[in-house]
Image (spheres, rainbow, N blue to C red):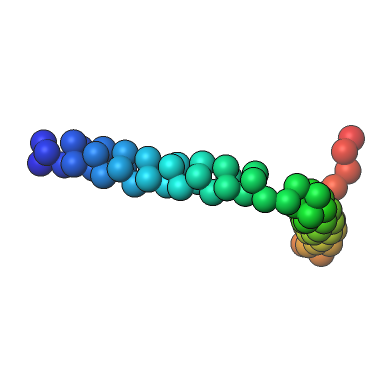
Amino acid sequence: MEWFPILAFAFKFLVLGTGMFFAIKWHYDQGKKGKLTERRAVLRTAVKVTVIFVILALILVFGTYFLATKLGMDLNLS
């Protein structure tokens, strides 16, 4: 059983190293492509993610408030 940490660390290093190599290569290759269309796509995606996050956060807050009042919890801050 003393060989397992060595084998697991080597496997982890190999997998993560390979993944990092391909991630860096992909980003480098993407940097060579058209910049203007990429910026528009990134901006559009960022706006979508932000809107979805805000909507989900509001649903969570109001849902928690509704559930707490339905269960009869005291929500006074004082």
